[in-house]
Length: 178
Image (cartoon, rainbow, N blue to C red; front, side, top):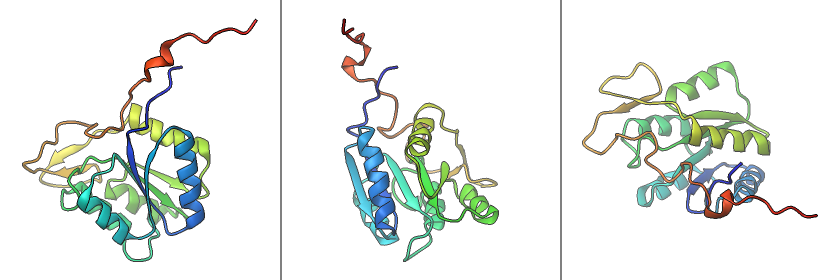
């Protein structure tokens, strides 16, 4: 299997818990991601998204200074950030049915319950790259996969650098050691 190139993908990872941030950072770094920006509050998300648009946003719904779920809704409606199609992974400590429903309705791409395993995180990132759900671009919303109609370019399901890109040397056959 060919190895994917992730080094130039920027990920914004926001969680109030230092151990979770470090764990997810290590998982992603080991997978080849190098541009990892860490934060612990919704204010950190606002600050970073106002000056740069990451290729992937990973955040906990349990942030100390605001509701990350409502922020995701604002992103999907084009009222926050500059890319309503940004892939978003939501982390949750206690995934009650009501909370998961609220998260899904916000437009989050996927939900991961804590504690997070390496396989779980990498599978979800891989799903976003290979088989991401489509959006409905409309003036009205009945589901979370809604993006408000605006004048900005919205034609792609992959407007970020988080997409399959094979490494140049990955197609070479492995040398046998005899």
